[in-house]
Amino acid sequence: MEAKSLTIESRKDTGKNISRKLRQEGYIPGVMYSHGKAEPIRFLNKEFAKLFKGKISESIIFDLHEPSSKDHEEKMAYVKDYQVDPITNEILHVDLFKVTANEKIHTNVPIEFIGTAKGTKMGGVLEVEAREIIVECLPKDLPEKIQIDVSELNTGDSIHVRDINAGEKVRILSNLEAAIVTVIIPKIAAIEEKVEEEAAAVAEGGEVKEEAPTEEKSEE
Image 1 (tube, rainbow, N blue to C red):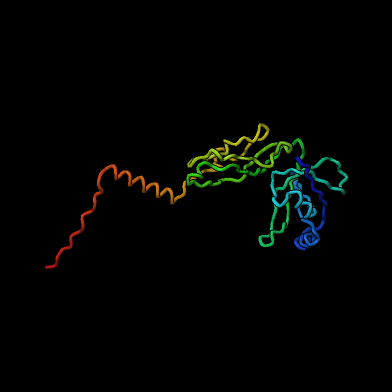
Image 2 (spheres, helix red, strand yellow):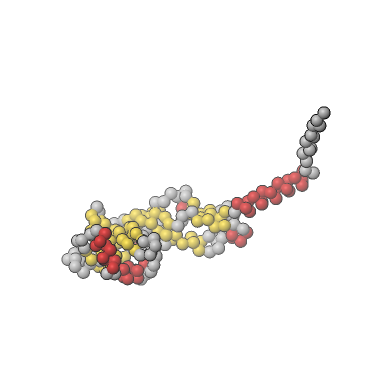
C-alpha cells in the first residue's frame, strides 16, 4: 500500500478572518483532536488534495509530520470531519483525529459495490441503503474500503450488514440487521404484474361479471 503522509503546522491565531487569509495563502485551517485536546493547525491545500485525490475519506490513516515539534514520536491521524463551500467546492476547514499504533479507533469505512445484479436484467432496480459502515480496529487493520459483490442478487434479494466480512481484526459496530443493498421491483412494474395476475385469475374463473346498469325511474 502506498505510504500516505501530511505535513502540519501549529497555529496560534484563530477566527474567520485568519482562516480566510490562510486559504488565500494556499493553506487549509484545521484542528487536531486527541484525548480531549484540540490543537489549531494548518496544512497545504495541494498536499491534502494529493493525499485524498479529490475524495475525502475517514477510512484513510496517514502519517503526520510536524517539523517544528520536538516530539519525535510517530504520529498518525485520520479525517474526522470537514467543511466544504457548497458553491465553490473549496475545503474550508478540516478536523483531524490523532491516533497511536496500539489504540483502537472507531470510524466509518466506505462500501464499494461491484458486479451487476441478476435482478436488474429482469427489470429490477438496485437500491443502495448505506454507503458506509462503522467499524472498530487498530489503525494498521483499518480497510480503506469494503467491496460488496451484488452479482447474485435477484429481485427481492438483499445484503445486510451481518453478511459483510471485514476480516477477523475488524469489528463492525453498525446495526447487523440493517440492509446495505436491495434489488427492488419498480412500482410501475409491480402494478403491471398485479394487473396481469388479476387478469389471469379472472380468466381461470370464467367470464367477468358485469354490473347491471342502474334503471332510471321515469317521472309520472
